[in-house]
Amino acid sequence: MALPPLPIPAKPDPYAVQSREAFYDCPWIRIRKDAFQHRAGAEGTYTVVGFHRTACGVLALDSEDRVVLVGQWRYPLERYSWEIPEGGGDPEESPFDAMRRELAEEAGLQARVWEPLLYFNPSNSTTDEEAFLFLATDLSPAKGEADADEELMLHREPFVDCLRRVMSGEIADSLTMAALLTLQARRSGVAEPIGAALSERFFQKPAEHPSPSRARWSSL
Image (cartoon, rainbow, N blue to C red):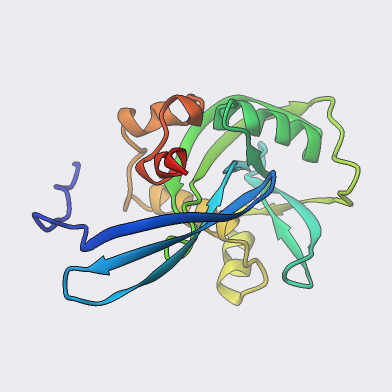
C-alpha cells in the first residue's frame, strides 16, 4: 500500500535570491554563487555545485545472487573502492542508455531484464546531483572497453556478503550502498518498486525534463 506524502509547508522556500553569479565551469561540474535574503532576516551567499551529468549505477545480479562489483582507485578519497558499475549520463542520454553502455564498458556484460531501483540526491546540501539506480538480471557477456584512464578489477560477491561489507564500512560508495540497501528493503517487504511516474524518468533524457535545480542554470 502506497504511503501518503510527507507534509510540506505552505511556503517551503525561505530564500529570496538577489543575484546569481557563475564562476567555474568544466565538462563535469559548474559552480555558482547566489546572494540571498532569508525570510527570517539573514543575508548571505550560497555556493552551489551543479553536475552536467546524472549519476547512474546498476546493481547487476547473476544467477547465483552475486553482485557484480568494479574495483578502482578513487582519486579524491585516496583509497581503493569496490562499487557497482557506475557512470555519468550525458544530458542528451537517458540513464538507461548510460548504464547499458557502462555495464558493457566496465564489466563486459549486458542484461536482458532492467528495472528502475532508486532515485535520490547524493549530496543535497551543496550540489544538485541526481542519481538513478537500476537492477539488472539475466546477464550475459557483451563487448565493451573501459576508458583509457580507468584501471578496473572485476569481482562477484554474494549479495548478503555485500550487505555485511556495507555495514562494516568496507563498501562505502554511496550509489552502491543505496542500491544494496534498497534491494534488501524490497526483499524484506519494507518497500515496493517505485511508481510509474518516477520510473519514466529513468528512460528519458534529462535535457527533456530538467529538474527545478537544473533549470536554474539556464538563466546564467
